[in-house]
Image 1 (cartoon, rainbow, N blue to C red):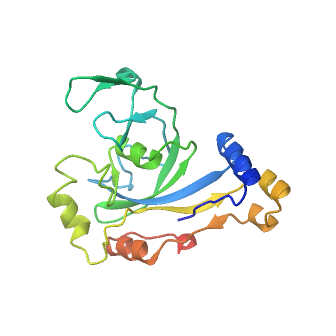
Image 2 (cartoon, rainbow, N blue to C red):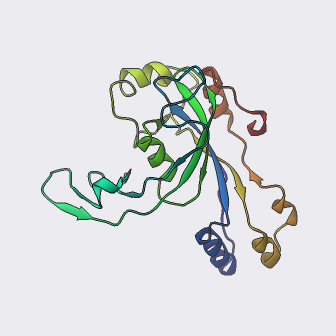
Length: 216
């Protein structure tokens, strides 16, 4: 998807400042595993526009993984051996999501992260009880989704290349960046786009997903 690089130190500083003040907006699409939906295509935990706002911290049992931390859990946990305690202050996080289309045991969701925590969208979706297709780090760990279920839904499909189905489709830059750094002013009204790649589209449509035209 969209990737942002600064070509000089001054712009790097401005971008960091803009991210800290939440002036830069990002829009993602993700294909997620689902177990069941209601007659109105609502997914448990994601109904209409839904705010996922669990704080996030490191997962003490895995060096790469993060986890949602409900207030009742505090900021401590034992490691994988159960013989030590790691302390970390969870960081606030907010992701807004909604379902765009529902297919064969999968759904297409739109996501707007309002904070920039590591793996935030993946962690928040996992915390809501779903996981992104081909996300081996945060796959929902129960018999309905892993193992035979996951294989039957996607891995046996010729359209599944094993790539994580999370894609940054749009990036919105603030006015001040255009004004002070001579960036093409047309970007103010026309955000940077990265259309869905063909393998994402083919895989999603093979599973019954209807992709909105603006992303094609």
